[in-house]
Length: 199
Image (cartoon, rainbow, N blue to C red; front, side):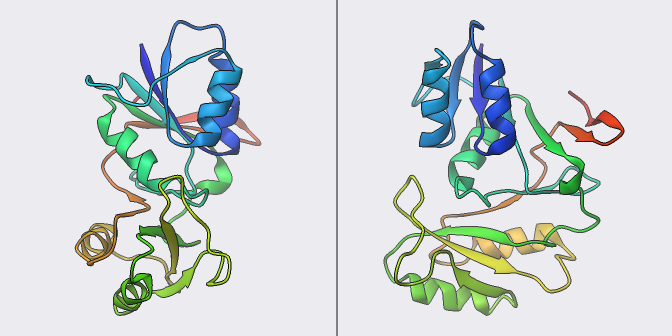
C-alpha cells in the first residue's frame, strides 16, 4: 500500500502509528520524510501509480469538508499528494472546524522572482497580503519558493470563486484552498472522536 503522509503536529502521530506496517509513504515535506525514515518506513519521492490513501491535517474545515491548508508551509506538495490519492482523509481537532473558510489566513506559494509584483496582483483580489517571514528573512518552502499569507476580514464567501481567481493570478504556483478533495475527516474533541463524510 502507498500512503501519502502530511505535515504538521497532528500527522506526526499518524506517521508514528505507521511504524512496522507494510506500507510505502509519499511525504509532503522534508520533516515528514525524516519522521518516516526514523519510523523505519520506505519513503518514495515519486510514484507512477495512484497513491492508495493520503492522510493529512488541516488548518480550517468547513461543513462541506472544504479546507484551508498550508499554515506549515507545505501546501504545494500537500495538494499534489491529495490530488494523486484515491482517498484523502483529514485528521484534526475540533478547533479547526469553521462556519466559513478564511477565518485565519490562506497561504499562497509564489516564486521568488518578481514576488513583489505577484503580491500586488494578489492584493487587487481584495485580500490583505503579507510575505511570510518578511523581506529580510522570508520563509522558504521545501521547493525554494516564498509564501504570501492572505487575510479576509469577513472570511471567504465563495471559496470556489476565490480559488479560481488565485489559480489564474500570474505568479501564483499554488494556494491553500483544498476544495472537493476530502472524502472524510476524523475529528477529535472533548466529547471523543467523530467522523465526517466517508472514510
